[in-house]
Image 1: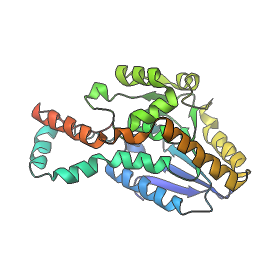
Image 2: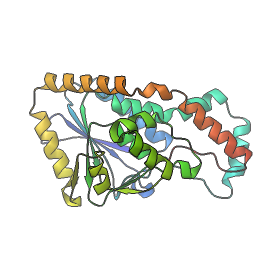
Image 3: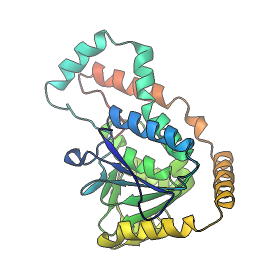
Image 4: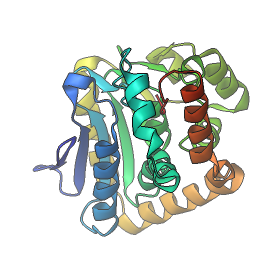
Length: 264
């Protein structure tokens, strides 16, 4: 695969690590990465050997969020020309890529661990909201800047963020777009553990080892039940129109002569 690495642990049978692997772009999430993460999740859904999955990033970032490349002065004209011939249904499907990736991560049957090794912005925070347990390096920080970028929160992110952070905290972070630290994330319950940078992956593997020692069926049934409870409390499907909101935002941007936004 071009944008992610999938590694089966040689020492811990049942552990798989998915690494977002565009370090030169701070692991920004492009359409190819969406496709590859979705494909990896499809493969893992049929994998009875894999029982724990670690999600992390290559280099100095977990992920800078959606790849918003091409925001130069040339971009608006190029985008406008391209969209004169755009297929609205094809664009709608493309706009829903983030929704599909988030759903794929959240529905993995394996226990998932997010290892946040650096900055996590916008869509990257959504990815993390879809995993079961989160560890953050001390230097890690988070940001949800969509409103500042004139982008609505999509990818079915708001229900997931509300589950993890509560309504008031989610409103504050989404509306102010304020950056928050690993200490903040720990205090608010978004991450389970904050660890020294050098200990992040060893601690994630130690947690995986502890989980792998548990009864497989008990663990799998506990996860599926917990996911069902979370979905019944704050269902993600209530934001089913997210791809259309993103499409409307792009139309407005074109009318203003600006760039076409995508989830950060």
